[in-house]
Length: 326
Image (cartoon, rainbow, N blue to C red; front, side, top):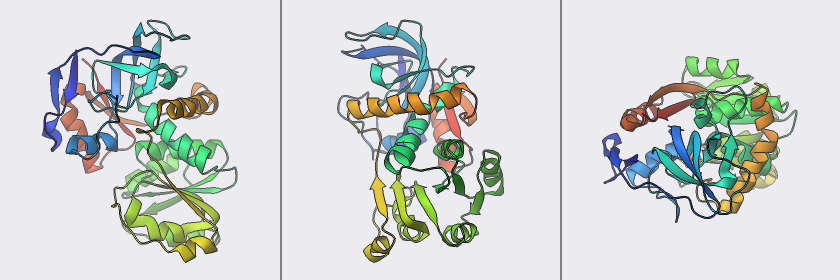
């Protein structure tokens, strides 16, 4: 088969479409013939040499895919060859085939194009596990999403609205904020021109955000704590704004607030399966009914993954960028 390899870390040109050995499904795994994958920030970090795959995972980038089951490994039940699926991966999505633990596989939602389904597993699992399983967003509460026009942001808006929450977002352009509003965002903040702490405080009559989903890390830590409501929960899922910052413990104590920081890729197989099971129970009915949908910016050939990485690094996209196999 062919896959995107990274002979040496570097810029987008480091991604090489090359012939590699076919994967073989192990115990509890299925082999998926990949139709599409999607670009995530973690893929860019891996390409740059900063984010190695977890032990036992495929060395190729790609944290989600969609396709058809080509082979069933030992000990797997409930799936059949030919099933159209999408899957959460530890790596290997940028390839024509990938072996996946059966517990990380999902059916394609009703009425959805198979390629589009590749935009779902990573973002839905990230949003559901952080915003709902850890931060316990409830109806009537306010969620602040940084990077509201990203793949994760566009999904977080829709899921929060589906459970009856109010949603504030930050984004860097008028167009991106308009797209967030179309998805249901109530409070729109241009981070280049406005202070999100002040804007959220004003929009919530001084209460602040009950939950914040943050992809920036160090750069926003102090302001995120100030933007939290009493008993607020800050969920950090990225470090685009750096890894080290000073935390005012007094401010955190006064608000009786909590901070969590998670990554999905390195979690044990059992934890990923539990998250996928929760997604299947709570999110898939919304997708089947058409209440929630993945936002896809564009599709590019998987062999031209370098171009897709450039698009994501330039941050001109809205939603997900897909990579489609030949």
